[in-house]
Image (cartoon, rainbow, N blue to C red):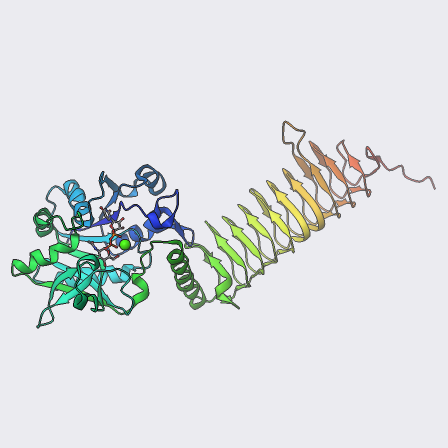
Length: 448
Ligand code: UD1
Ligand code: CA
């Protein structure tokens, strides 16, 4: 069976009061429109056509070419939007899902049920409805004596009796494609000057055909986003769904309301996430770690048994048993080996710290390679930038860097060497050599 999807996303989104097209506003880090695309795809849709209008270029740019786009030049209504998309299908058969780009909470499971319901239906379409005490301006469902759907009446056209109906049109449909292509042409312009997709229900009924309806139990799925209050509601619900899935997979959160995890982040069992933890991008976290409170991790890989307290980690690799924080910053290209300890106020960028390195207090390490078990004293700085170029620093294993050492790169320090407190090291240091002073010189051995 061929299944395709049309996503309606040309609307103005005026109530967002934004320069960004409404469907590009992020919910838990992912553009709203992506939720519709991903749900359709997960429900088995093989082809997705997105109807765009407002901010079309920006939408294309952000979403990319995983889907097809058609531009609806004039926003003449949802019926007109589907008609515009129809041209790209040139009479294709099978089933067509029609959904909107502003309902990120609608799940793939619901779309699957919708498709299955239509597969059992002799008639040309199945729609989705929900019972709600809050009509939110949604179209009302008119059912006949036998319970069959007869029509959808838009709020603007509804009479006082119809306005009391609490079964609402969600705006997710599954159509027999061949029927849709001819029915959509028959939709007449409404008193409001728009072509309503919802009018196809009456068209089917007038042809003596059965319109089937999938009634959703979960009202939450049907929250459409028109303003930033609804955006925040959706955000909260998605976060709850996401965090529940992680907890059920073995991750502890002492207060899940304060943990922010973007889709796609991987977290191992028995890891504990403390409040105000933000995990995003291509982040992978191992087992039995303790992360947070107040920690941000983006596009990074963290091993097992790590303790990361109040730190910011971006584009970094952290191996097993690393302890860090509070107030550390790992930037792009930082790689901390097994058991590295980083105390407060450390920054590492484009550097490899081998296993067992200790960097307790107030240090900056950039463009450096640091051997095993090196002790980096408080206040040590790699002076890696001369105002034009970045230069490397290499430090051999078991070296002791004294407090407040300035390592003026390019620089090589051998194994087991020592630098005195406050030294400014401008020349390479040999294995086991001790240097002190400004600029640092080998310490003369006392004559005995
Ligand atoms: C629509 C339904 C209503 C339903 C409600 C649920 C119609 C006529 N009414 O009303 O029964 O209860 O959704 O949210 O369909 N769009 C276009 N091009 C247009 C107009 C709209 O692409 O010319 C897109 C919008 O971007 C939006 C979607 O279609 O994603 C729905 O449009 P909107 O104007 O919000 O319809 P509603 O009045 O909410
Ligand atoms: Ca709407």
